[in-house]
Image (cartoon, rainbow, N blue to C red; front, side, top):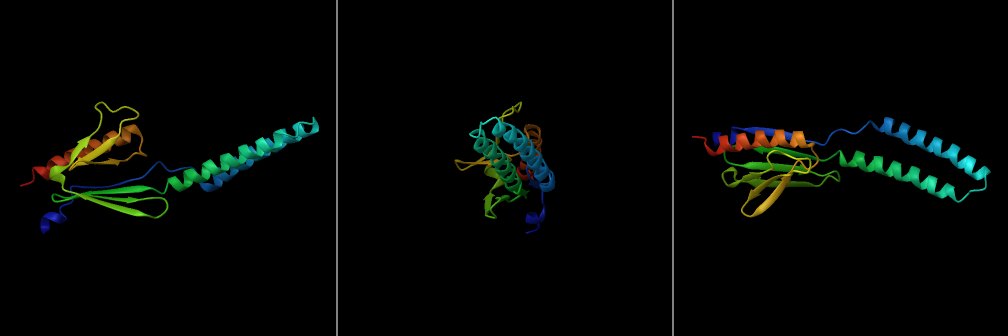
Length: 158
């Protein structure tokens, strides 16, 4: 029972934080203002057909910033004890997913040396689970090394 209380690794993985909403609104506002000035000059020259495309450009930029803010709400909480590896995933829409694995049977896979598109995958009983897909490659490699060491400690615990 006390073995379950020995936490070998407890890490929360989150994406890099985006700019503040106020800063993003300022950027979209400046972009909209620049497009308004350009659209006015095109309208004066009789090229009114440009206007819908400029409005679409501002709308797409605002949509992309909004999606980025929503995606920043993801997180993965990894807790390793000698008897279990627990991954608690929180998605931006509020859904949660819990994955519990036996650390003795977990195999960690990542390219050595890590490349930009290298993925950190945990394998257990033929099923693969990717971790930290939103992390920068160096952060993913650092976390993989920490998890590898902690898994080794969990397996060789007396």
